[in-house]
Length: 256
Image (cartoon, rainbow, N blue to C red; front, side):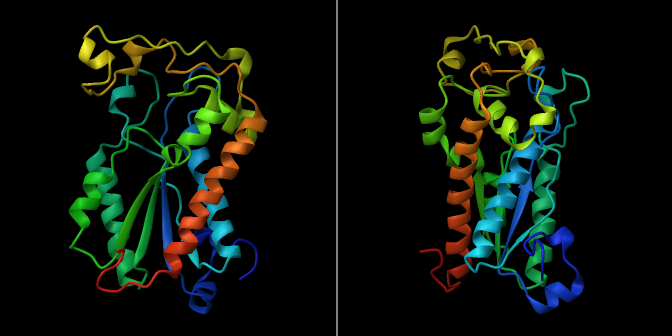
């Protein structure tokens, strides 16, 4: 198969019969605002490009991994205070995972990586629900957590949503969609309850109350060079995991 053999959406039946896949990657993005300067597809663009780069990295090292089409919606109920944010509740996202797992198992693909690109998505309970119900080994990667050490090294400002880190990536991946002249400072309000403010207690954060323009993190120091450094780390780390995953033997004690 020529071109991009890891991309399932570009493959033909003849391609797949000739070269079966060993593992699959299922990316999840979101459709939501990110401050005033980044597009609603930011999460989807980021996770799609990181997934594609990692699968290419793995394929070139002999790992036959399939990149499944990205799901462009996420669990966004706490952002619905902003216009045109699209929410799919987590139970629907979990159902997509469960259906994908069932399909992959039928086709003999026994390894799946969920690549999550949206902080509101919580797939860990789904993994626990699937455990023991399927012969497919399902693992989960929140890509920004995978490179957190490098984010702290490369970026000057703490980033939560639409700040320096994401803006740097978007300046690399889709510079034509970044409108820096529109960006605000990304200030976020602290909760009045001390336990919430200190992070001891968690809640679903209503972004329309926490921020003015759905941005949490200052993007002013973002550069495409920073984005390139972050992207390359993400691709190398995830790609290396995919190589290892494809090579691993599925025996009775796997993954230990």
